Every structure is written in structure tokens, then in C-alpha cells.
Length: 254
Image: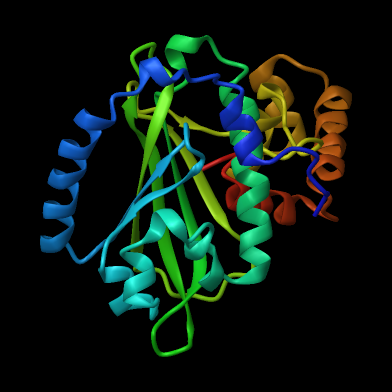
């Protein structure tokens, strides 16, 4: 895993949210409705304040499900990165990598589109019984400041229905406005496939041979085979079946 030269907090600071643009009196009232909902929910709910760059709230269910100290959960604003402490160490570093990568992607968009995306992760978290379980964690912008910048982030964590062993974080990014599932736009550098490479990989998955793909796409067999080689190199695999599986795991193809 490459060492990052930037942190999520530094990315948040790029927004340059002004004190005048955040209404904490209004947010205190809205937080009350979230806490009320959380009391009825069997999900772990949390919020992050990107202006103050800290956790803002976490529901009591974190203590029951994951064994956190209930007093620390209820004073999450003073506890720093408390919620990260029970995430599997390997997943924690990969999750950080994805969050930074997503932040860079967000800041490449026009300001009016930056808050349209929901991230969904499957990570391993230590439960109250001391065993790592697969957890689904969904993150999205809940409240914008007065100028439209992402201010309060909502997170919802639940036990994943998929408890099969996995050694990597699974991640999807969804446009909440259009419903589009992003693929290569937010993949790690060096592993992004072009639209043509994705198209060819999907045709290979459907069982087409190079000559059939060439005919369908009006390309030469030489060009198709070159794309195949590039796919293997970019995904760092030895054969096309591994490429298909890796692309699926990375969310490049469904």
C-alpha cells in the first residue's frame, strides 16, 4: 500500500468552510432527530463534522455490537478516532487509501456535483465477542453549509449479510442523483482501465474470442490482443480469468 502524502482532514480543509456558513443551532436540532431514529434502529449510526474535522455523534449500538466503552461513544466528540480502533488493521489502511482517493475524485468535479456521491464499504470489524465480522458501512453528505459545501457526513454501519472471508476492502461509489455506479473513475492509480479495455474485458467474460471481438468492435485482432495485454499489466494478473475476477473485486465491471 503506497504511503499517502495527504490526509482526509487535509482534503476537508480544502473546502475552506467559513464559520458564518455553518449553523450549529440548526444542526443541534437536526442531531436530535438522528439520535431519536438511532434509538429505534439496529444500525450503528455516526456523523462527522468536516468543519471541526472530528466525529460529531455515534449511536449507543456501537457499544452493544462492537464492544466500545459506552461512555466514550457518548462523548465521541472528545475521543478522536475512537471508531477506527476496532477496524481490522489491514482494512483500516486500505479504507484510508480509498477515502483519500475519493476525496481527490470529488475535488476534480464541479462544485455543484461534489455532494452527490455515496460510498459503500465492506470492512472487517472486531465485534463484542472479539471476532472479526464483515460490516457494511455507507457514507454520504447529510448536511451542506450555506454555500453548498459538504459539512456533516452521515455514516451507517451494519453487519453484512456476506460473511465469507475476504482479505480486502470492498467498495462501491454511487451517484445518488443518477443512480450510476462508478467504476474506473476512482480506482487506484495505475489500475484504471480505459472504456475500450472495459468493453473488451466484458466481451471476453461473455465468452467471445479475440477475432469475434474484433469483428464486433470493428478492430483488428492485433489491436484487441494489445488491449488484452494492457488489461493484464494494469490489473497485475497472469491470465484473463484472473483479470475478470480482479476487475469484479475492484468494481471496474459488475
